[in-house]
Length: 195
Image (cartoon, rainbow, N blue to C red; front, side, top):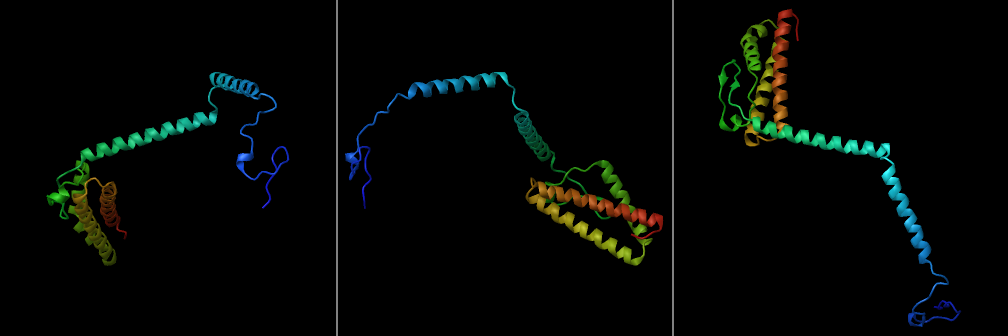
């Protein structure tokens, strides 16, 4: 292996043979220091004079909006958790019934208008079902049975985990689906048309 020559053209076989310090031909520091001072002064003056560019202002507004959204969600969750639980459910025959303690802990207190409307729809359900053709009646009965089972299952699971937002949302959706079915049955039988 050949050794590289040093600055004077000699072959170097060890690092010890290299000079310990090499002085530059001229002093570079005054020029470097002057240039750094110019850059610092220009940056400070530019920051003091110019407002933020539009993109930075938009980015800042975006972060503020995201922080506000997170705060709103946190407050909503906090309020939602403090409004749980309720005590009374409507049964299939429209009468109020109390369920077990686990489901009791997880149910929302429903709106009295909702409870009245649901009870009225359940009271009139047998008459409306009788007005439907047998295939439609079977579909409605199966749908209501599936919704009743889904409500029971969701309420049971919410009794075990009352803070589960997904289960809460699914339960509310199930309540809404039940009301849609009951309302559609009423409308279909009143109009004399099928579902």
